[in-house]
Image 1 (cartoon, rainbow, N blue to C red):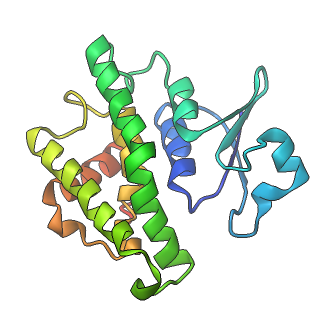
Image 2 (tube, helix red, strand yellow; image 1 turned 90 degrees about the vertical axis):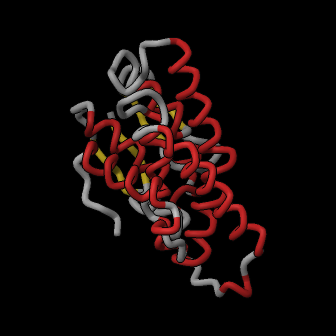
Length: 196
């Protein structure tokens, strides 16, 4: 399989983390969002939405959307809970990640770290939203080491991808100690270097 992704994107790194964790062979093709490489005719022919990641499978063609990709890659693996209700909880957190978490943490990070915007140029509601998201996570993690059950699942991988880069959004994770401990735990589980 070939992964078309941008290494600065948490959504793309999710796919890499899952493929590496499962020992899946892949070729990585770097696609820069900042250089508008997702807007070329060749890329748009593969994904008309013009977004990374996209994985092209030799037998099935392209698949887009990070959480759809990681669900497909991890099917029948230990990253998806066997228990139906725990599996539903995993989906719950994955949907929440894309609807509430990513539009807060990832957007603030992009504006501050890549676009170099000053706080005065950023909607204060976005900063407040990041605090709310991290509080939800911190409170949930007070009851366990992972988001679902007692071991790593796709929910953790989906949520850690941008959370581990919070410092690039000028967010101090020491204010959310359960989240910080969980980030380090998941990084160790995935055998990836700490982001900060």
